[in-house]
Length: 458
Image 1 (tube, one colour):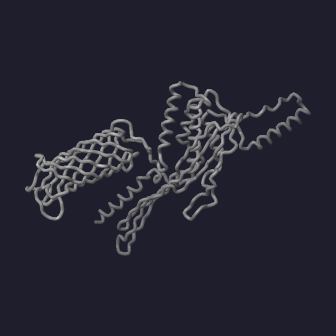
Image 2: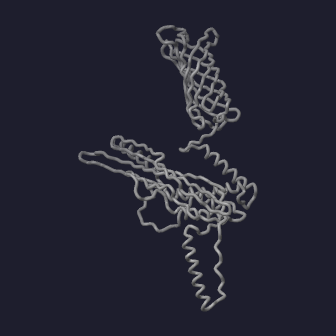
């Protein structure tokens, strides 16, 4: 008994801890030395980008936190800001990494001008006494484009949740929270003041906590108590850096597309980068707030092929499962609503008392709950006609049911479902007794084949 119990303990601990073993088994136990800062995937993309025909001289006066948000805590907000105040420095680093821009100092321009005045004053004194031919101080670079914008929002707790369980003193739980930052970046022409391009990027920030505990009397007056866990928070500064770097790469590609600047390289390579970005942009435009991708998927016309089992619920005892086969067509009015008709061949059986084959034609109105997702539940209701194999019976019925469909591709879907068929009389099993009309059920697995372009959202 004790062995089984301790096996449960080990299983719970392993399940919880292995989900975050990277964080759990790399716990900081020594003082670490200073290290070069981490880079994100976007940093590497910027560094590997196609080179420009000619780099653009840009000035960044300020690119700062415009949210006014303070860091959220369980007891409220602190006076610490939620995001970094050094976004201008991060942007300049991203511009430098890209090799597409030559950033010039504008954030602390007064310091630069003061230092240049000191140089002039010193040289003036030097010329007066020793060297009147000292060269003049070279002029400052001026920017053809000014980059403006900032971190415009910090939304905390856009998604929160968790899961936990406890049994007989053994338990564990996990919690998560997701925040989001939003960055806008725009390029402004210094010659005309025209806004050449504006891009918008958002990045989520994930926080996770996981813990496991054990509390139990193992012997008389012997209490065993243990707990472990960890919390992992995505650094806000890394999220800001990645968002800004993504904004810079987006600005470069959109500028190439609008011919504001040009890339040095093969035309096909440039086109591939622009097409890839446009595909990503289209996907982003069809993605909802909580990472739900809204894409038109199902075509207007579909062929239905289903197979499974049928089960009668009539006046006789001991019903048995038998075969069920179905083919049909479906026609969509819009992504949510369709009508379909099917021809059904099935058999109904009661052990040693009833066995007969039937044919049915069904007409249904169907609702697809999540038409823009790959996985969607569906529900239907309709009416139909049932005939036996000899066509001596002609019975009417209503039916309703539902199931789940998964799209393997935009043209092929698989589904599982069930149908409850309600006869309008008591003649299905040739026995008429009781107050209730006969019924039967269909359980099936189906294949849906879609033809033509997807139905558009209106």
